[in-house]
Amino acid sequence: MDRTHERSTQAVRLESIGGRYDPWMLGAALALAALGIVMVGSSSIAIGEELGVGQHYFLVRHVVFMGLGGVLAFMAMRLELKTVERYDRLLLLACFLALLAVFIPGLGSSVNGAQRWVNLGVSKFQAVEAVKVMYIVWLASYLVRFRDEVNATWGAMLKPIGVAIVLMAMLALQPDFGSLALILAITAGMLVLGGVHLPRMAAPVLLLLPVLAAVAIAEPYRMRRLTSFMDPFADPFNSGYQLANALMAVGRGEFWGVGLGASIQKLNYLPEAHTDFILAVIAEELGFVGVCLVIGLYALLVGRAFLVGLRCVENRRHFAGYIAFGIALWMSLQTLVSIGVNLGLLPTKGLTLPLVSSGGSSVMMTCAAVGLLLRVSYELDRTQRQVARLRGEAAAPAASPAPMPATAQPVPSLAARGTSRLRQRIEPRLSPGAQA
Image (tube, rainbow, N blue to C red):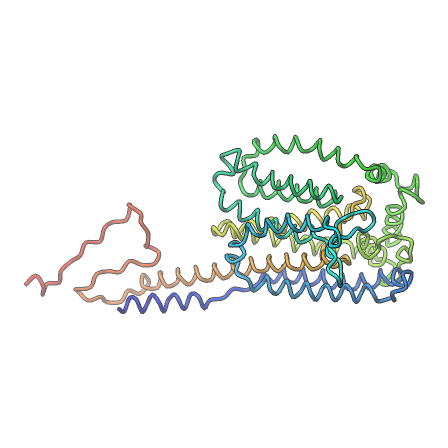
């Protein structure tokens, strides 16, 4: 009776222990979001005037979507990961349905020849942004359920690759080559971090590379992007227009920048200044220092995400760890491509800068992903605190043993619980009074 009461009291005490969200991760995300609001407001004034919607239209819109993203992040931060894991297969089904919805007449919407958006009435939503988050959660759950088989059998390894190929084929029909390559990179990265047999995975990857190359050069506009990337100033008013103006903006910024709001390239010279090429405006207005600040904040956010994921795996919280790995891979790869495009290091692609660029669906789903990361850090910290409490309670009797009645049997400590055959069996002993 007393032991049952002690166990129930201990369980309640452990459940009452909470965790804390990683402060470095939270601080980096908030700093990037604040910087994004400032730079969207600065870079979109001329665009709003040209379209006749007002100087602050895109700023207000960005703030609204950032607020909605904050709500999604708060919900993700309060949601137990075991509840998320329970619906992993439904999330995979939702990935396919979301990508199919863009092709439904009346529901799907085409912009600049790309069929990527779902018309929600009040706004348009880019389906692939939600697919990225849901796919990472499903793949994390799959790697947990088939952790040993993924490393040992062909079938378990090829299944997620097959799912990725189907998603990539649907993205190729939209077309969205940037997200297609991103899904493939996330899949390969998570499989490697999940312990897949690398020589076995090399075969399908090598087979997919020629296919990706063929898709990349199949459309004439992609070939123009590749050729203009090599020398944008060879045709600065046509194929190299975007990259040439982006490089001029970066060059004008020099070390300290021309000052916040003083950019010239954003005055209808640089296309998509508030979305895809917002880093070029940052480089012009805040200079080399501003670009280094942005890169440093992303390095902090992604680095903490990888560190939290590693600690989760070490504590046998594999699902949480794989989610952290997947989101870190997504954000790092997308950031790398966006920065590379703005600095003329990579061919032009339509990928936004996470948490900074304007874009409703991208902003909201990135905030939701950050909320998941913070939830992972919260549950990791909570687990570490609970383990520390258990170890402290187990070590306390050993430090100052209390006198035991002669008739009582010793109770094994919490640390000694288990089924190990190496532990000595504790024989019951009778008191002297009982022997008499």
